[in-house]
Image (tube, rainbow, N blue to C red):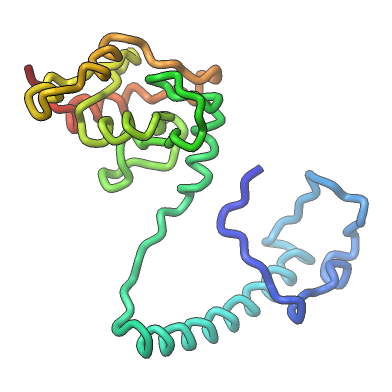
Length: 203
């Protein structure tokens, strides 16, 4: 189970769960659910929402004043929602092994987007592929791609642009290692996009 964007109250804001959910039992471990649209969960959620709004307003006001004093004009940065979950799910889908090289040293493995978020891609497992960090860079820059039938293609531009790339040429024509779960395998639609829009075809 993965939690997206958790938040935590300070101890002073803690509430006894039985005050809002009388049927809650300390023996519950999992699968207990409540409908936030109906009582009593709706009242609890409204209390949480009000507390968050009050906290966020106060923190935002303090943060803006501190930023102005210490760093000058503030700027807005858009978070990549779901990036952490995407990385975990893709890593698990490929059993912690690079799809192209078979590398199993986890610190050098990265979850690559086939169609980037900047090009209207999504945080979906079938839009991801686990790659060694150098293969990830080459994939993002178009020197390497994966065809819709899951074969690796290495661009001839590797040789003309850098006078090198023999190691990568050994990947050419091989099939990537695929997730066992067919629903986690790369989408042919996304791979086709990468082939046509990102891959540097050339001699």
